[in-house]
Image (cartoon, rainbow, N blue to C red; front, side, top):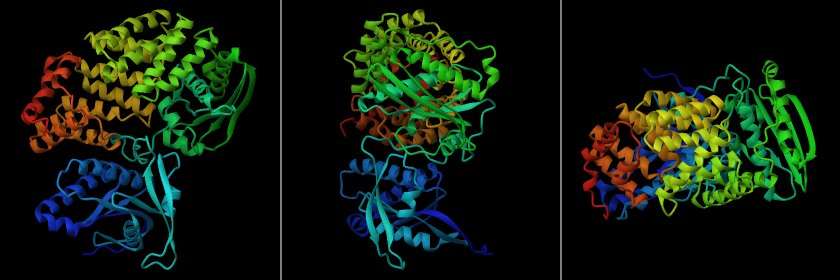
Length: 596
């Protein structure tokens, strides 16, 4: 029996293959296979971003989304991945898609979706260039401006079947930006449910606005914001969103209630900083995200030398407003990591570069931290971050000698802990020293110490998850990753890889593949995830897919070496490493001609 027709407002995506007839004329069987493969990959991307593929008709695909932002992200993610995929094809049969996205009414009947929304999406798709995405004006207005997209107006178009002209926009990813995570769900294990509020006062500290006349002072306002996050994070009675997620809203017009709802917190702190000569002015206001009302606001005009006292005063005021009971037995001693303001300035400059996570920025960060330590040899915080730059060089093979970088890291991290045993970042670095030395229990102890000092330190939860995984305790590592994700809802894509590793070593290969695909949507040019994907496919008996993943890894990094991984991966149980290699051997990937 037919379903009764129902009408609803939906975001509709329509995609069509460019020049499909010409492709089929070149080689009918090969063209059909590649077109279907394109739609299969696109359907996986659509599903990963909360959408539903409604139907595939010949050379066209129709999908439905609940949110415009997810439809746009999925479209850009697929077009980026499909361009990379086509670049590897040597013949002329390279299926390119045009995509149109509309917001309109659709009719659902007999398990078929029809209506003006689908027709409009199809008309918009016909405006798009090959490999492009065109959206309706109302769609562009719905997508939050914090997302890294450029909407270029194409003007108004008179489209067949529509009386009124339709505003159309071409969408592109901003240069240098990564494809963001789904607006519906930051992690597949969380589903579409909104984040529940923690059972303690919860807050996000938004990056303070730089009000100085010199834009070069941005590092200073960011640094003060980050220090306040750290001060609040050290308190076990509060739940504090990680710096990584808080800073995704930097420089973007934002609505505090929306931000609090997205991050699953009750309160937000926002403010501004003006630095001029030896004076600094800080304004701050605490906002209730459920109502948008102000709980507290203050302005501080001080000498720059009083910056640490101001930070502590802001922290004290916030805690008093959020959780008065916390202040009863708490002593707010001035937190002053160094009495050398020049050293502190270099530290802030270095940390601002460190977060960019590039080879050049890491080198600049190291230079800044070195100058900070030279000015104050007892500046433990600067020494710990300096140590981390050497480890980053070693892991990414950015330096001239990985062995030299590891040695410098292993010398500096213990010194930082000796200088300040209360610095959680220093304990994380010491844990890294132990894990690379295969001293797994000592590494885990340092990770646990870091979290005891700073319960809201998402980075420490992530690193402890790595330590647990390498120690053969992947189930516990997954629990720790859940903690990290809750503290950092806009988490780095590396969490998808570590989650996939845990699933892999638990024999959950399909779950591992799903997690890896989510990472590769956001960051397609990561060789290690393609190699792990090949190992998963090997154990699943999907050998052609395994070899394709291996070839992609070698395309990204022609110097990738399994032997190098055998030497450096610090697994406690040798069988865990062999389990990894067995998946690759089953697919015979090492026999592939790497020059092909």
